Amino acid sequence: MATAKVDVYGMLEKIKKHKPVIHHLTNWVTINDCANVVKVLGASPVMAHAPEEVEEMAGLASALVLNIGTLTVDFVDSMKKAALSANKKGIPVILDVCGAGATDLRDHKCFELLDAVHIAIIKGNASEIARIGGAAAKTKGVDSGSVPADLRKLAAGLAQKYGCTVVTTGKEDIVTDGKRNYTVKNGHPMMANIVGTGCMAASVIGTFAAVEPDYPNASVAGLVCFEIAAECAAQKSKGPGAFKERLLDALYNLKKKTISKRQKVET
Image 1 (tube, rainbow, N blue to C red):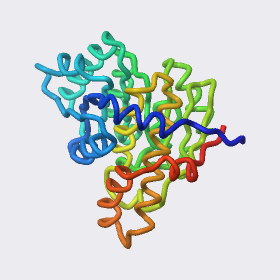
Image 2 (cartoon, helix red, strand yellow):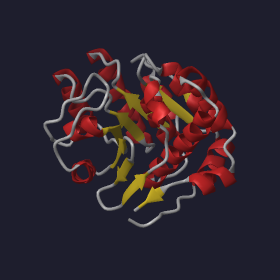
Image 3 (tube, rainbow, N blue to C red):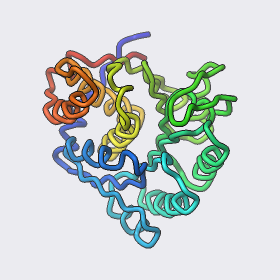
């Protein structure tokens, strides 16, 4: 693999300058964390779920983030309405396939969304992406299970099938559009000790995609930014509670020099 440089800080500056609205229909467990991480980056989060307003709200946004972590059938119907409005406006729709591979309902609703609307970026952990990619993978609730297949090949095939970017998070993150492939090696093990880092990552990716139409690059930049912040926060934290608090501070205070020195991206 070769080292790749992505203009992470340049995109971060665009976010702070343009302050894009990021519309969410997201996981109720982590909704506050998702809103805060978007706000810390300099963007404007809105968490509007009511079917009576989701189309109008999506029309005001620069990106739409969907997360099925706490799905219901009615909730997915609202997601479809919002996503069709986003498609009409031409803004990116990010789908976090949270818990895919755990139940038939989650799998069915993911495929239903993918068939009904255009998703620009699919994001999930290894077993979630493997399941949506067609492998017989099982997810442990919302935690990744084992994947009995070539994950990179599955992700690339999934990207090609739906004409989108696929982001697979883990110890090393995989980003692919079916042609270009990136591996992000930033992050810290402490991220696995708090609830919400995966959902927050989807919101970060959506925020970067709001200002960068090259969605593989936007996804890489978002992951690098978020995971470097995690590395910085972990250096000063003795446990998960302190880490979570410092993660937002580290993200808010990220400097160009820190990003340039720490980013680990390969192609």
